[in-house]
Image 1 (spheres, rainbow over the protein chains, first blue to last red):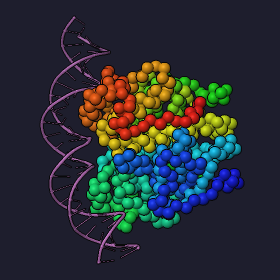
Image 2 (image 1 turned 135 degrees about the vertical axis):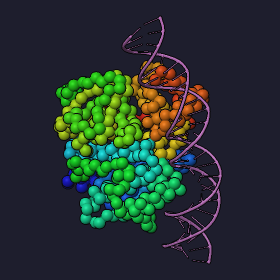
Image 3 (image 1 turned 180 degrees about the vertical axis):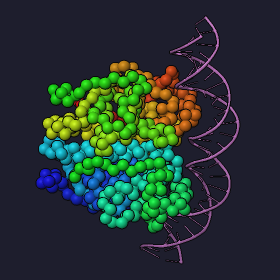
Image 4 (image 1 turned 90 degrees about the horizontal axis):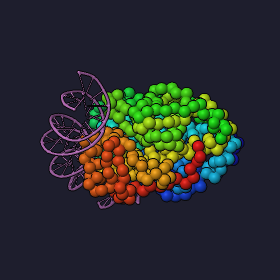
Length: 219
Length: 219
DNA sequence: CGGCGGCTTGAGAAAGATCAAACGCTGTGG
DNA sequence: CCACAGCGTTTGATCTTTCTCAAGCCGCCG
């Protein structure tokens, strides 16, 4: 724990809409989410954008930079966000001195892989309404896992444009699809975000099941 | 190295079409690809299948089992395949005694994440012909990286059904799209596989660029 | 008050899915 | 040696999902 404190080089606060990392940058830092929501995305030159995943407290960011030397995707804050910074250079030291923490990092990477696998299945093979139900259920359960039941079901702070860019759909079609979910009383939409009314209804519709991880590390 | 040899519990040979891991199993092993091609995939109950990624020599398999306790996807051999088995139980030991190897595992996980990110961008935002060009170019460069230029461009051993299931397309449309690539003299198709004739043409069409990793570990 | 971002809706267009049929191998059993 | 079955591929016709274009609404903020 002392090492973690020492390894940490600072905290950073980014307000909603701000960039946390941009494609092509060579950051000397890794980040851990402490509070707030963010999302990772890639874009094509002509502007088409794909959201890859969402980041919530406890998630680790920036490991891919170790493979390539630079980031190959960007990260933007969805709400006001605070993150913890670590020096990438000292990652070896962490692996040598703190195998438990090293294992946690690997565990987090494996979890991210699981999420991406499921996203891929959604975008590739689920219909528009199934995908949408899946995404909202997915975020709902992630949020619940982090809130630990305490807060009653938190609002998911997302725009329809973002959902469209996550699911590979146009915004128009996304809107019509969301409306169907609302009509079926599965969710409620307000402001820029949504509340889940019937989580089971969503997972059934998506033909998906939430699988809680077994041994969450304590990074 | 001695430890690697000791850590290794054996090799396993799977013939083309055979299952390596199935969804829901609790394997006590991790695997490394030594030779051959395999692919990871998930399915929905009604049979829709999504290929997640392809496995080539050097790739690590089964880490996700650590998050969940069981595998949440399946793996099938595409060609005759030989893999190296490790005991999952002893992963902690590896992290304690061999930080360099532990780092390599993490590196491989980060690389897989990069691949999945790009696949997601393809399926979500690229058109059918862009996707197809991307996938073939992607496999071409991965193969080339492994063959180290020596063998002239190896055949990519894949069926059109598999390409369809990787790209989220129907087999009919996949066939028509591949035919366009053939007509443009970008690839040649024969038997069950394809040869790349013009790698740059493919990457241009896909609006993608191959980025070689910087410091490959030696696992 | 005007402008902007996010949401909503309708209409027509296009990409891709589904259905149906057939071809060319290859392996197998008579 | 031939008939036949099965798999992977090919092609045409039609149908559906999703996209694009266009316009309008609403609430918020300067």
